[in-house]
Image (cartoon, rainbow, N blue to C red; front, side, top):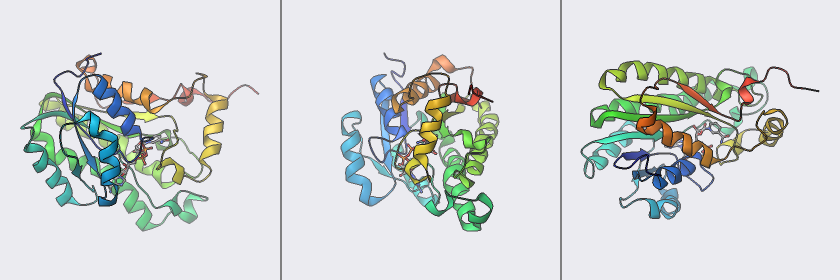
Length: 259
Ligand code: NAD
């Protein structure tokens, strides 16, 4: 299909072929988007380059979102290729591993709290701030969230708070940027094994639990998330902004399951 024909889209957050952003990239590429990619750390550059080389004609750009000057640099670099573009995918989250286990109260530190919110939520605001005047009307921004934002998921702990912040962030940005006819939405994804999720203590138990309870007897993949991201960046979704769309096979609907 060609749902993104003529659209120029920036994709952040690829670190491996398991990355949700990689699924999004493949779906966007297959729908004819023109893509630019970022990588976080110098040591990951070659790896990311190898993954995306067939999907872009542009060099990949370094951007560690914990640094304002990196975010500035990213859009200066992009402006060398694109005067304006049609949106971006924010597929970034981080918290030190020691925050993702055991008791929320005992294990959450001030530093852990700050890092989780800075990297996983504020970075979205910072990116929009820096590029909003480079975005065409009808552009679309997509970020990735998780149900831990409004339900208690053992071990997810402070990341749940950061995702709650991210989702509120999406609504406030949607309000501000709507005047430019630009949209922003979140996809709340099913748990999927990736480098980030493997940092969550007992993640395999979460996967098993989902399998037992989810209405759709089908394991959501990064390709499914990619297809929804394509829809959200296409003109088909022109009336949707500030939403968090669950792509979780209906897991979030369940109160009590059958014995
Ligand atoms: P991943 O490990 O493949 O991707 C996480 C990405 O975040 C990596 O590319 C990493 O480089 C990037 N990142 C971390 N800190 C950064 C920084 N300072 N600057 C720039 N980039 C940074 O894992 P993923 O599961 O694909 O995660 C992508 C998004 O999806 C995250 O927001 C995550 O919370 C969300 N999500 C994941 C799941 C899941 O089960 N995998 C479920 C729901 C939501």
